[in-house]
Image (cartoon, rainbow, N blue to C red; front, side, top):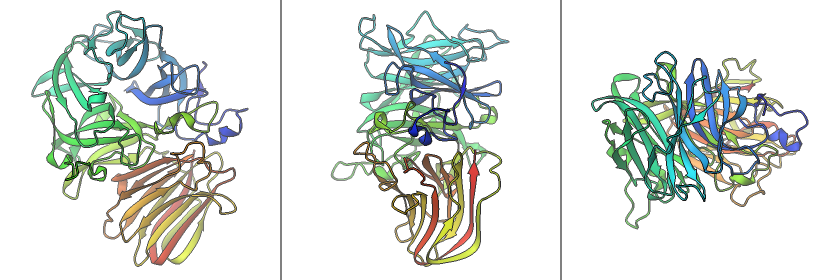
Length: 510
């Protein structure tokens, strides 16, 4: 595979190429899923990911590789860590071994060390189990060697996977910490190491909150609350499939404390089953209330302790059936995450990484009253993503809605609506275009949104998908869409009264 800039459709692709996004990473002509080994090193963001090098459906799991300097425009590289006769290479993480604790590099030139799950095949010495293994790079992540002593950590389990490793410096000393999962027990298991090769068990967290499906792709990291370095909390991300709030795959999180030995969730992060024994998933904490944000993990080694996450923009309910060719599946936009006080409690806020220059705005409304009517906004532009930024006072109206990627004859559109009576924000793709390729794809997802001073704030990115960041990123909804050919219309509708549009700007992104 040659290096290929992958954010635009390649010449000669079939009609499905029109469904390739502009800003969201996709592989040139293969399948991808979970982001793996996200790391920043020497000015470059490295995105590794689960990849089938030979087909556009799941299988032959290896680590694909792409790089970027801005988190928006990506260059695809050859497969980094390949499956072989002994193992498939499942999800994991990468650290920069600054202290050369592993001995794979030097003090002056640290190695990048990948900690990944070996899914051992029939005929191998460890067949039927999953265990953690190492690979290392001494050329900045461009070539990799598997460690001869693999695996370095096993439990005799068939579902022990997805190690996220980070450097811990705190009350329990200085060491590497691994968070992984016993997927079918809905548990996060934690280990420590001095050298990335020898691991000591620490503790277990879970089951908790959404615990009906398999737990996968955990992440654990500290964040200051409201930017205060004296008030630091820890966030534990646990992706779950099935069992997400919108159905199928999704990512939940917990806020709490990590002392270097165990994670303890704050009581307000935990939800108890109801009297009938069922869990109210809408009371859990979710990274995203939509259908298509899964296996989300954060970058290691980012300067200034910034915490940036990327998720797989898909859902296992229909992942292998997406109507694209020759590529299938892509990543979300990168999101910078912070902890902020929301209604008195520390909660994640997420902001998309977007181009600094969005060009000349195509549509602008300011301080405009809209009463029981529709306002035509500038169409989405072929070859560009669309950004809509809005601040709206619902006033007396019943609903505010945006019709996105509307068909020329009005027959289809993706609809984002806010119900002022219920304070619910809903993303509805049931009549968005091509929904018939799988019975579970047509759907409408909703999330509770509390207004600030009566103002609804939205940032909407339309790029063969819709990612909605409401109230400065306190609530996020993300869904894939496959609109009909020529569907570019954009419209604002106000129904049941009058709303005041403080600001509405539509721009093109590329």
